[in-house]
Length: 573
Image (cartoon, rainbow, N blue to C red; front, side, top):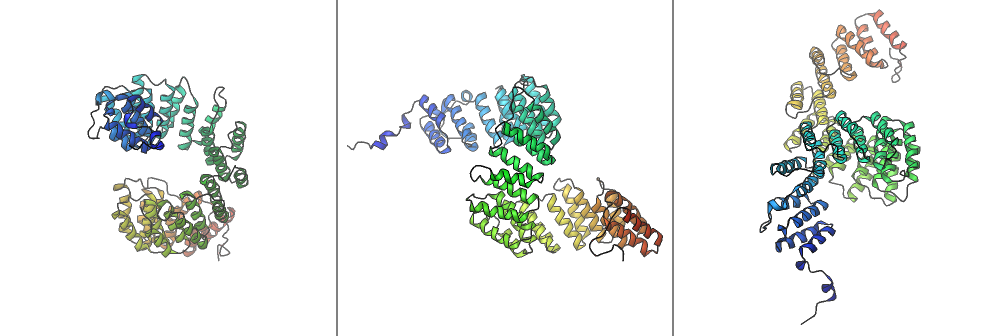
């Protein structure tokens, strides 16, 4: 008989493991392959019936991010098991699954199992509430309020982790007032709670409050801000364009020794870029250790684009490639935007070649800016080709193609592409409808335009914005239906902007309607007193009627506001 090889004898024979050994094995396992092997052995040896092993295996799947396997195990869908459902499923089991579902962006499923747990008379603990509250923040305010009531009923609101989760939940529901109230009433606050409110204020664009809260955090004796605190407040500062405050926070980050952490450094660079201080952002970028990763390079590239330095953005991208840093979808999206804004077709073609080389050809996140780049650079056929090569087409991809068709003056084709999009099962968004309505305006098809305008709210539940109303007014004006356009503008639920009023004033000139033109012009003069075009149109209206005195008054009014028409020489010939 051949003796076993040394390799074979050195491997543990999993089939001989005791329950305790299985428990230890589950505790040290870290990937889904090992989890599946252990699960199979437990089923074979009928050990899955052990509540302890069942809960440990569920926790292992949770660690590996295997939500489907967790659900299958939990529902006891595996054939041949004899596990005792009532014995194995307890508050720890449910909490483990709810935590995984909540983190996996499956809030409805998480709430379903939370309700199942309560129906089985299993009472949630503070860990359960900490897990389910983030899921409520992803659903709606009614569910959130109900869960808050349950927290109070079970007496867990004083728990710092539950209160932190409540702050995060209300922040996710965009109810910063309730988030602040929970925060202010907490008897004890840890850094997690401070960061929860800080993130909530920043995400809901309450930037001054976020900056003020960070200042309060600095005054806390027993707490010190971490990289989450710094990166969050820096985002608020960046969006507020408060460069002086940004420099102070930079100094504080240096004092805390956190400025060199990638998360904080990226936020610092982004802040300086958004504040228009590119030289400081570049200085930080050049002082980073090593070559950095794609995220850091992307921050700097986006900074160049935001500041209109498109050539440097493209140069930065090429340097990134030379340094051996692999670009991601954001890298390509950013540099394609730079090429499009700079109308550099050669740059765009070169970038497209790298898109293919790095395997992003069918990626919709890259295809969308690729289509836009070719359209803006005047290469419509290449835009069509990029669209055809896109794998899964998102609403952004379809909208980019619709905009490309519209940009090249093919208004009839816009409707065709839009209909193809609907047939493909993709729901349009607000931007899609702007292109469609604009196309209807250019073709003069008011009835079809009205049909699509009504579709925005009635079919897709989107509340029309000023941009959609502006398209309708422009459409009616182009069709010469001034009175209909005026009535439509008067019935708008929002105040007409300069674009709407400008379209009406131009239509007044075309229809020779001076009384309406005077009313519209006065409104425009208040909104944009420095726009010479408005004065010119009213001057033409007066001049066409022989109203010389009023025409001269408009000219003097324009001169008093220091309005000059640069292109074409004098405003009045």
